[in-house]
Amino acid sequence: MILVLTNCGKEIEDPFPPSRPEWIPKSVVDDWPERGVDAEPGNVIYLEWYPNPETDIDGYVLYRMAASDTLKKFENIVYLSVNDPFRPSTSYLDEDVLVSTQIERYYYYLRAKDTGGNLSPPSDTLNYALLRPIVATTMLPQSLTDTVEAPVELSWSYSYHVAMEDYVLTILETTTQEMVTRAWFQPTQYIGGKESWTFQPFWRVVDGDSVWVDLESGYSYQWRIDMQADYDGDVEATGSESAWRYFTVR
Image (tube, rainbow, N blue to C red; front, side, top):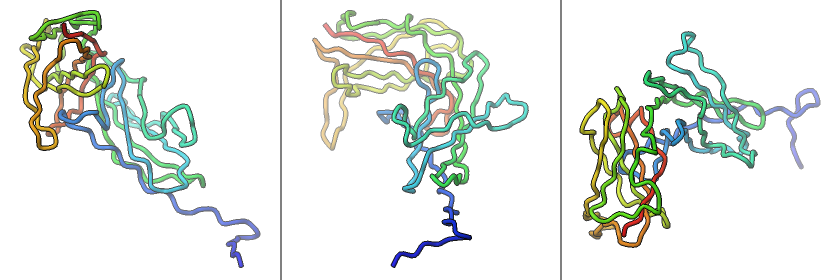
């Protein structure tokens, strides 16, 4: 026997809203790949969250407020359906953000929506602001045709960034995309100009074993510069990422 609950001849709709969404925590400098809210090349803020555990989730509503908004009102900026084959439903690239010498901070929260139209309670609110990134044309070496010899020196120039506190320089082996190093260091000056950093081989502990890390002859690598500021512990709330540049070791 099948029991169907009805109300005046109609099936009772689902009265239970989903649980509130959970953001993926922001990764610290030593983590790779990076997770959670972050800057992306091209003046973009990346946001990432866990999928809700309910089986009837239809999508997620993302809300945003700019710190400069005099009304202090969150706006619904996008609905991300779990059934959309053309974009993910648990991450978002916010390209409609301001990047200038005047730092603009953005605040975000999420609500999950189920197939019955129920909205979850709001997620926690997180925030992020963008710095103007390193201009890729100032970064040397530039491309895979640029061959360099050890010790490999990387250089770049930047304009004045009042909020910038630290650099994070990332090097990947281009073919395998394996991380070689994530170097975290302070600039030599904060008023603009040329900077450089030289790779030095080092020992890394991997699964309990010591591994010698070096840039190998004949291999190609890619590198970028992150600028970071406004730390909560080891996690920044303001930053930027340059485009990737490349080089080959002679």
